[in-house]
Image (cartoon, rainbow over all chains, first blue to last red):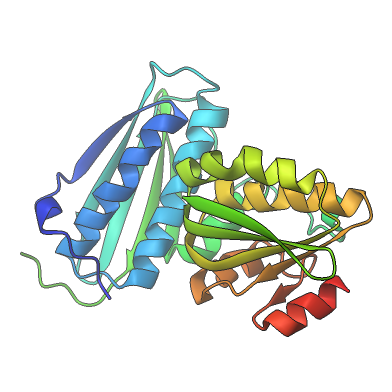
Length: 151
Length: 111
């Protein structure tokens, strides 16, 4: 079932976040509002939130390394049958999809907490792309959705 | 994010999570989860009411599971919904921590 929340019916297409984990709590209400507007199924809402949380928390924890004065922008653009989320930061260049994925653990003790995030984005986003910017990074995450009835 | 725990027959500690295991949800339960994992020998993590599981939420499961395992204990994950189970599988966790949808099976895994 798509999310419905009339109070969030007209979300801004762009969200600016501070470089701190606490501010990422603003992402879910924003995603709820967007996905309600475009009648996105619950499973796809889940996938969007999963991938954005991973991408954004990586930037905050590793890219900015605890510099809360830095910002991140997330923009959502609807296309014919997909939602395209673009995440931009001012962190040092880092292509998450070029990193060598960690070897699959064979015991619980080898499980690295938080070491599976890239794999999650690769699985749950329909497409992903990385672009290095002058002084930053752009990550594009695309999710297939039912053909749009764009309001 | 809500969390409750109960002692079951057979020395099993059942921890029930309820809500979204996102960044805020994980932060809300981390300390309590780790406290329980510090003493539990047989830990059943009940995921029936978990609506969302992100990578920070995975940490909140993996760290206590490692703690219990390192003391020779056992952990089982119980009744995740389809998307939550998909996250567990993608992360490769289901091959290391058993996932059960039947309570009797989960109890049997914990021995």
